[in-house]
Image (tube, rainbow over all chains, first blue to last red; front, side, top):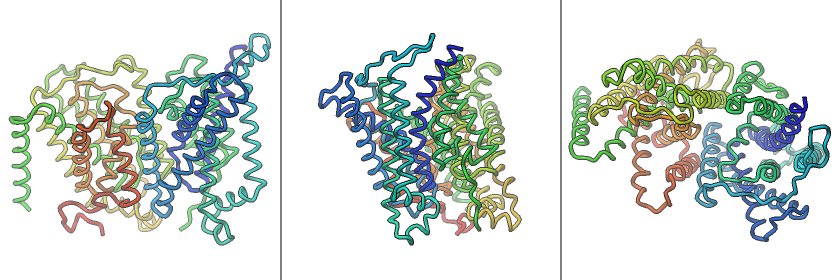
Length: 299
Length: 313
């Protein structure tokens, strides 16, 4: 039982990360109906942005201020990368076939991964310990560590912030409008290109946030670090119903917990295969995911 | 037309003999690699270009073919080289069976979702091979029977490439290919006109995975060593790049682009890159520029030899 609860704590913190990254996938899908394969690499770029900013200013010791700077650096850098990717790779293809956009996204992703190996070097770098990791409180044998609690809190704040942005602001209303009727939204005076760009930036900022949270829990970063988390988050997004924001969060937590239980009970090498099997099963039974809505095909 | 075929056959044999007698083993290996790449590109082109079913799991089919053929040759039939063609076909059949399983949901899912399912399939195959100790697990499977001479390898791989090309090209211009083309253009309209959508898509999957398995088997016997790592997502992407670059729907385009994209990194090898695989930089850049400037690829749906029956336009 204690073991189970400890896995739950770890699973929840990974679930939070998956939720944050999955939100980026689902937002882009909701607004452009494309799978942004490069999202996992924007996540990676965020971690590297934070890494170099911290090294440049020599802020590598555990300190809440340094931690905040790292978070902000990663968010800003990831946002910038997301903005550029959208502007230079996806925007010229706005009118073309869906398959072309998907292929471009795969191209961008591969370019970042292998370009990153040239620019940053292929071997893993150790991310500075920005947050002291101590046991905050102990309940029988279950220990709550400060990093885990920080991940919960920051994810919670980010989710509240995102839901405020989507539901309460003018920009969020415009995003929802573009997402539901991209052809009608411009008639209502919405600058579609600007809204799409904003959506990319918001998704990328969330990915950047997630990357620093992962980097303080597992302090190793390398240009391929996005692949595994990206795949799992993507599975989470589809599982929850791609295009649906609550779906992405729920999917993220379910997948995080599931993967941790699997790892904890000795099937770690099958982890990826099982997440994909789960995904295929969901797609076969309910192709739109848990919370997705079915779009009727028009003739 | 008859003359052309004879000229082609003669030049095919001549190239093989020239490579065998005058060129070093490095270039010989490249020639075989090109042929295998071409078979893989053709197999993907049939499912993605002609039938418009986006597959990101070609590496999974390739892995099935490669492992089946390698295990059969090594463990059941000894290392007699003349059984390689038999095991290669067996590998292709196993892969086709898997392709049939994957195709079952394909009439229910389309576009992105199908891409995800095929990608997931390849990933599952890879993870199973990784955990299967009998075939070496992560260490890979080595000492697979290879062809003793280049010329034999050339003849076998080359004939398979020619057969693949002829079969897929004729399927493309056949009644079946036209059905697929109609589904590709407008699925609902095709269904209204009486095309059996699900059946045709399933058949297309079967054909494509068969040839992908064949390519994989030849790949294993060419290198003599295979590991689950060789059949990762990157391999699927590489095959996709070959097919897209040549033009989705153009069979000769796939062969042409497999040739260009196999040769190009070797030509650029002299550049100082610090020991990095240059392909993975050139290919994505090429792909992105291509998608923006010329999204239909080098040849679009046209074929190099412009016979009337070959084009759908």
